[in-house]
Amino acid sequence: MSDDAPLHPLVAAWRDRLALEQRRSIHTVRAYVATAQRLCDFLMRYHGEVPTAASLGTLGPADLRAFLADRRGDGLSNASTARELSAVRGFLAFAGGAVATVPAVRGPRVKRGLPRPVSPDQAIDLAGEIADTAREPWIGARDFAVLLLLYGAGLRIGEALSLDGSALDSRDVLRVTGKRGKTRQVPLLPQIREALADYVALCPWPPAKGEPLFRGARGGPLSPALIRRSVQGARRRLGLSDRTTPHALRHSFATHLLAAGADLRSLQELLGHASLTSTQVYTAVDTARLLDVYASAHPRA
Image (tube, rainbow, N blue to C red; front, top):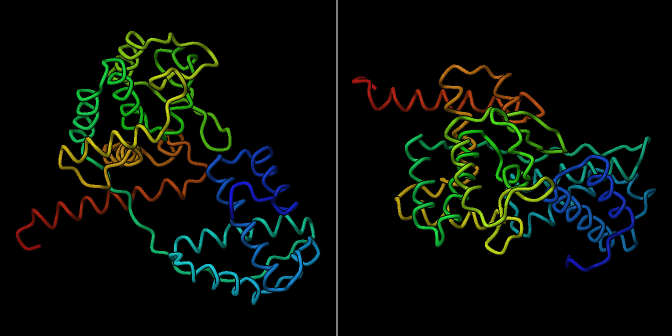
């Protein structure tokens, strides 16, 4: 499906529901809408007619299995197929309204991987390497502050880059807007406050309410791709794993807090997870770390 191809009317309506009412992220909306349009295009080929709300309501398990088989033919992994099925279910529930009946189709089994945290020294080394090799001092200070927000405050990269000048109104806490517009307050460590102050002092554009806090080289909003590219280069120079990504710094924040005795409910609030289930994965991470220590240190392991 090309970006300029017209959307099925029901898909366009669902896009508006996701974006405006449910306040899903841009990336989620784009992915879900693409899946829904692929389903409509497939059904057009499969049944020879444009799907309507009524026909979508009469789909059976065989129709969904045929769609998934078609998608698997494109090389989708189990995880991608499971996400595709989840998006399809949401779209069919929307299209059918109050009387929607979504066919019961079991998705592929997906083995959930564990986040791979980096050590505190590696996190600081990574941020320092990026800052030291930046082409201008203010850009180095900017990237250092962004990475400290990911590791020291547990922010998602999108959350950090969506901060505006008002984020500096308080010295002790940071007001963060996360997924679905949910806000939370995150404590600011002295090191993060210092990094933010250094960046603001060097940045050519003074912070202002409603304006992006982190700027690109020309003054526009900073792109996440630039941070990812900087991390990629720095981890290669430092000999760190390919799993050392901006999001891995957030995983490290959570894992290290849990190892230090933080309770899951507090960690859930700090990370902005809607469900405690999302936070509980870090208990497995910590257990895996303990097993690694045991295996490497115990003489009978």
